[in-house]
Length: 393
Image (tube, rainbow, N blue to C red; front, side, top):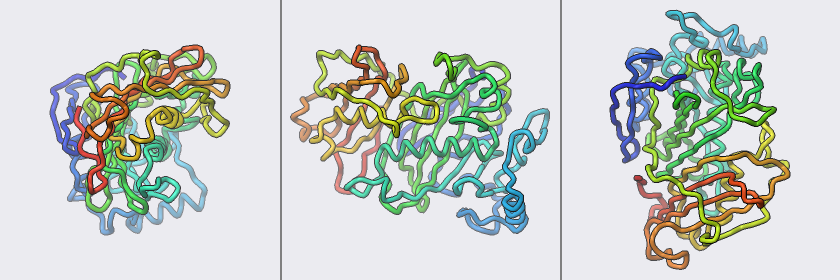
């Protein structure tokens, strides 16, 4: 995947401005990004292709027959037998996913020629805190889950956490390089949330992915997220370039949009001076349940460790509005870490009541001083509606 260039356009996302770039060359344009950002749940439907039934997974009679046949034969879609050659390029399963909303994976379906994956999720009791709202960690778990489900339903995923066929042959896996999440409102217990996600090229050796979380009833934007993944060799644990064979394999699934849905924070996250840290938590170590399928600590566990060094008095009155993470190194079962944080907005850690917005810089490091992760969190005072106010960098 090479850099995509073109004329930038702008669209509004939940009260913020998001930049987009439509390529003049490279991947053929197959998706109008702006249509994804509308808050109306039906915004992705083509009028001439509206189905007889609603969006809750009810499909037409031919589609129901196909699903029954697939289940009866225990058939599983694969990249080898589910591709069609269209204009010299591969498209998965069908050339028109907008009219083929097959609920084959966890209630999810593909839209816009298979480039966008949509899934409805219900906020469950074990995903909420004492305020009955979905936790930040649960939200991050759904980022990972919906990304993997897109790989499953398209047949792109064949091994590990999203590894493609060519990646598996070369013993490569995906790892998170950066993650940025902005929450406008946390959904509450029993609410149904509609999640859209898609991929795009990010630089020469990165794969970008964006998510939009919406209220399934009103179309209200609840949260946005953007992440960049890079490849790592499973054995050597060193980063790897994306070879041509892998670019060709990914090309049918990536959107012609290089810029993320969230404007990046222009401020560089500096390495936190250990001696200047306001809060410190030491002796942190992962357990077996914290390891993922790639045999390193999951990125969600890092979030737990970061929050360990945030004052409890802050959490009682503030909501986590935004988080930016830069992953520097992985850690494993034998790692022992320290979590440090420093307030970077005005005021001290003892005067939260005077501020509507509080920012912290974070550092996770091994006990030997080696840096694991840098982060920044933005917290906003809860309003009477328990809603996180709109966040703008």
